[in-house]
Length: 172
Image (tube, rainbow, N blue to C red; front, side):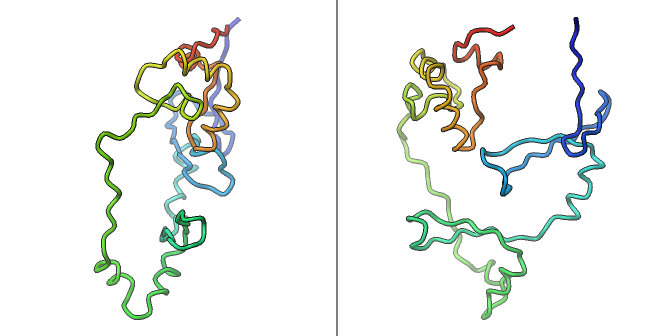
């Protein structure tokens, strides 16, 4: 018995032929997105109106006493943000404002110990230790919940790459 995989557009359910052009749409932020970015597949025709529907927005961080010391990220229309500048036009204000530099990485930064439940299962280039693999196998639900909460891919024991990396039994 053979298997046949049929690809369909995530947007419309339209069957995609092998020679059809497929557009990958990565959803980075959405109110209903709970476990980090996801990807969808569609036809070029289905996504051609995305650029027309795009909004001019300003994304800002508010650093104040609210939020327990963590900044709040706010998205608003560019025109709403521009209207907040009453002394000087926003375009001029943005050109002359002090630049923010990202924090510099510390030299000799502490290496993560993937053999602890806090970091086990996080993607990394190094070799998976037996301790990390054991933690992932024995506490998979806990590891996947932590990964999902952080917006990181989860571990699927049925995925041959994950099974080999973490020592899950092969499925057939």
